[in-house]
Image 1: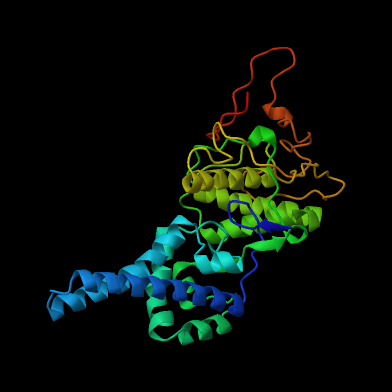
Image 2: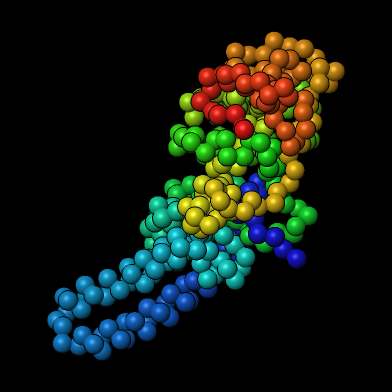
Length: 326
């Protein structure tokens, strides 16, 4: 049994495709493209036999660009990184952070591919893939993409844990456009490996990443929310938006949609016994075990966000720009 590893499936550890499998996928695509080009050329020549030489030459160039460049770009865009050859070989083109590619990525890859694959018979692409640590050709470098193995044994995949239920949807109005891809990748790497880190080191890393993410989004971590939970909730929101853009309003993770099952988010508190007291940096986040730290279970918000048991009015939340869950 194999499992789909894509940006939508929130798999972190991307497995770059090897040169032989990539070369086979490109060969399959080229064979199909040239077969289509020959069939289309024969039909067009038969239909336009009365044209002069200049018009025939212009038409031949247009057919070449359409069949061998335009159609592959359209296929990669509409299939989110999978051409016929990549589908056969179990490969997919993704962004550097593991997310799905868009038209601009496919356009850059296709335009550079004309030079490094078609005009040089793949020599430049092979040399670039051998030199690159992740097997990327020049088109991938300029487009910020990576060809990965799509089918990976289920036991080898690492997944970003889901955020606590009371945080899902709280950041739907957050502006994520200024967050760079490198920061997204760092956050995903931390979330998938935080269980392997020393508690004190993990907490400090979460605070640093949360501070960077808050600075890029122009907001702060809500009071009482652990930085790791904040990171998981924001990543979940981004994945929901990507899925909605890629698959439409009915995609999992958005408003009115069925949530995708994910690995449970470990919300066990980091106690002072495990982490010696220290002076946290001026980032606005509470230190573990201190005021505002979270010591509840995964299904309930921290005490500062809960409604009083006696029915009294909820105190005004801090000015973070987020509305606490009802």
